[in-house]
Image (cartoon, one colour):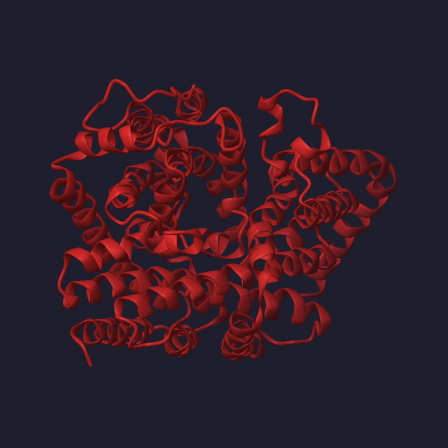
Length: 498
Length: 60
């Protein structure tokens, strides 16, 4: 056993221990398990939501992207829209959730539109998008651990061991376990990435500016946006799209629900951008690799960070890097597991069998965690290209949930259940079609100016979605007014019965 | 008013200054510009949060 392996094992055990500790003194109701009993103050909430910005992407993707394509994908890592949207959108969502006892993302749609069927649709869309996300995180984890152990652990073994670890503490502690491991993870990533991001440019080039000047001379055009392809209009539209989709993911909303107050959410939105700046160190690592370890092709580029690290440091430190990289994959995965289990039990199973008691629901959610883990493992090892396609689609899928949620926050919601259904389904179908057939605005309208051709397809789909949602709503509104009153009466009756 | 303050950074970050020179803090200008706006987002949102009447209400 080498030093790197020892370090990685140590942190894995620490992770499980912390995760299990977190449940002490907590009566694990479904609300406690799924969203920490809505009791997370600014501190834990910060690590929970901000932690989502530092996943395997920070490690492999951001540095790999900078290595492969230079500045455009690098800048893409900074997204101010996330926070402005968070600032305005999350507090009203939280308030509604608290008032109406909403504990999952599908719940929100179910209650807002008074339609369990819509809840099921949202649940299905999210699970289809989120499992590939989980799989990609796990694949990243396999690569990281196998690299950091100098090949002595195969990626598959690493994946299986890690999945067993998170299944244990997620089943036991749910959101509480996730929050505490998230704190450790962020501190480690911070230390490791900042250190390497400063060390590499200094050590190999004598500073940042000399490094960028060297890259600019060697590879012209790598440091600015090109005229087409990853152009400025691609950048802007893709930025807006991801920001809209970001908080629609079920695990993100679960994080939001676990907040103690809207105040901590707004504080979070304010402080997170500063935190995001740290990704720049990951970019520096990628840039520094361009001239030091040239000619990494394709997927190899994602290993730029590890190639640099092994070239420069002792095995024990490579182990520390590996451990923090592994945690970068583990924490979002455990958050996803918690949220998926909650959705499947509360928004699919309970709709199917309405008589399920809260206690049964709580047990079912926790039993689902190992089941989802096994399914995910199966697809991680047996899924091919299709998983990757699904992963690419995930963001565009989630963005399709945005209009129905956004309009439902208005004082007078202009969208009807039918409108919400129609918008989501049409949006999803177009996304599937355009992704599988490779249709972009450029292939569709080759005569349009380049600025429009490079726009993110998802943004165009979103506009179609909004148009359909509002259109169908306008048509169905007249007939549904009577229905809404029925619903009001029905809920009034329920109260009387209780 | 709070609304305007909070939207400024979103708009600002979209104005991409696509050039390498001059280097600021060792970074190409386009990178420096992006980082600058990320930091400003924090500043603007913190100001908005301070001015937001909702924040005061919740403190009670």
